[in-house]
Image 1 (cartoon, rainbow, N blue to C red):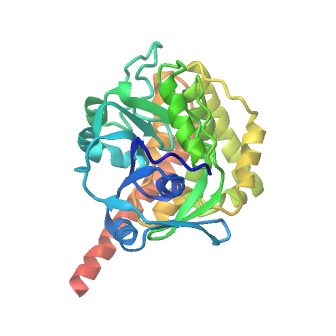
Image 2: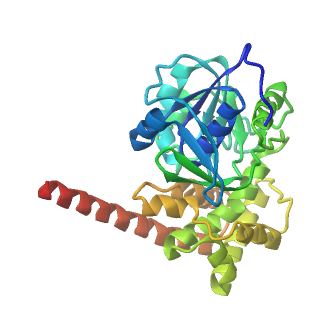
Length: 346
């Protein structure tokens, strides 16, 4: 990592210090950047008490840094906001995000799945269309001006090993780009900041195609992992689940092609890349097992919404979504029952 000059450092907020937010924050702080973390709960308390520890895939400590962490958005205007919360958490904080932004602030989105802004500054037939599954009440669209946004794809695999401790499994790429497909100095600036912290962050002309490329695997592997509790490696090495993933990906490819999206790698190469991640639980499975809400709507509900918008059949995607939705509801009921039982005992 390259150290940066401490003079005239930009103010950078990392909103959400989970796996990806924690990875970014640890590397950026170690490189000398001025980082404000906004988090809550046990993760916040651990950060305030012990700082942030980043470990390698084998658990070997890589870097431990002190942090400035708070659960309040009352921390002043930032020059760059790295939005690293899950997609389903954004509506609840959309109003507050404006309090840490000035007219030139850049907001970089790092969520899995299709973002709420997908058709904003799109320029196509669906310009301005809202993805209702990720912004159901339009709260995000009303409170975040798309002129502030840069799209970004988070490719690294990481997990929260314990509160305040992030395990980096593999990957270092964060390609980013403007929503209107223009080249910009500000995208290059953000790219240089990330490069200074040891990441690869090439500015891309077509960030939507890159979002689809990651989603292409996520929309299959993450829901299948929810249903089977299997790792990426296990899904790819079991012929029936590998075949199901491929079939879902082919359906998604048809939907994407109707929106002008092309995939720069063949399907089998994308699956092989997922297999190389190894015995890693997807973020969706991690959320399910931890009793947290999953990103099911962003990674699968959004694809079904676009299938209907483009009049495309996607029976396998819809079937897997239905099973995952039922599982999610059953898990929520079990969590409610457990919490009620504990309250009665207490």
